[in-house]
Length: 287
Image (cartoon, rainbow, N blue to C red; front, side):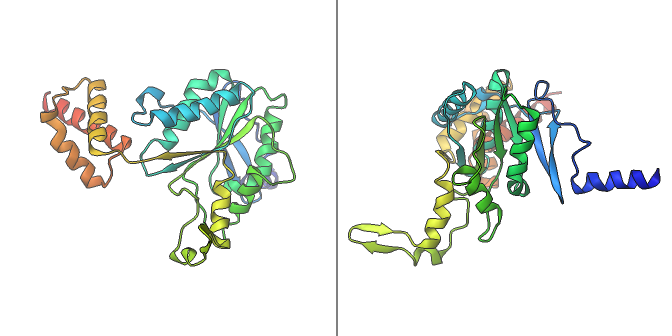
């Protein structure tokens, strides 16, 4: 009995998922892929962070583009993998999760994978097919803060998934990835030395072409940018109004600017954090 228990514990640790039930996507909206030494498995996420789409401010055009792509996808029409790139706190991952909130009732499901899970992509697709054999759901593989080093093995695995692998990907699976890097890999000054001129055209060298080739396999590129000062203050005001705080700029603008300066960023996340700080401290002082 003790030996059997030890074998079961070791199998679970190393990744034997034979005794681990597949998620029931009729009752959950999201799952995560847990990478293990000798495999991996899908695990249901019972409490999902689901932002409201209306609370993502200052990115209207980007929201519209990704929402249109998602509507196509859940309707069973052709849609593209999407790379959301840009500065921290600009709403990239929040937008993907907000789409889950809006389209879960139409069969949209989110599968969170991390950098280690990239190497398990064939196993992830097989697990999704087993969990949903009749393809009632539409899965977005969600990889947050994706980036690669120069010799990262996940780089080629992801290229194969996006375009170029022998095995066809199911029609009900897309990849939504976020990254601070537009081309997912670090850029070095030495890359510039490979560029050369051909007439009036600038031709990239092999290293630069390799780094660009992965991001080009995403059909949809969406850039997220820090706000200028005016937009940042406007969004602070909206968040303050939603927290039922006075919106007189003279009461809070100077502190809002100091708050952004201390964090080195004017983003939607920073504006929301300032509003919560201001509302909470003023409410506490008024007790």
